[in-house]
Image (cartoon, rainbow, N blue to C red; front, side, top):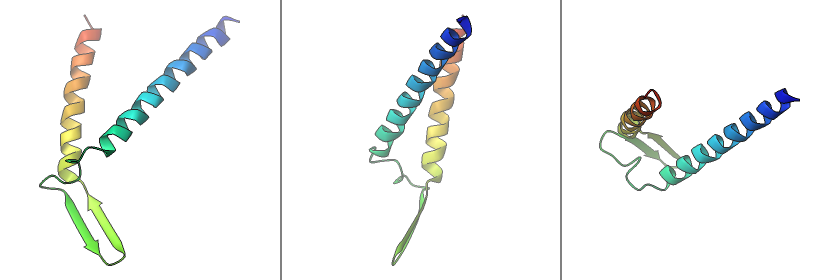
Length: 77
C-alpha cells in the first residue's frame, strides 16, 4: 500500500508543477515586450506571419539560468 501513497503524492506534485508552468507560460504570453525586442525576426506577408523570437529566447534563457542557479544553491545548503 505504501507504493500507492508515494505514487499519489508524486502525481500531485507533478500536477501542481505543470499547473504552475502553464500559468507562467500564460502570463509570459501577455508580456508586451516579448516578441517585440530588437533581434526578434518578424516576417509578414499577405496571409502569413512568421515570428522568430531570437532575442526573447535568449533573455528567457538567461533569466531561467539565474533563477535555477539560485534555487540549486538554496537547496544544496
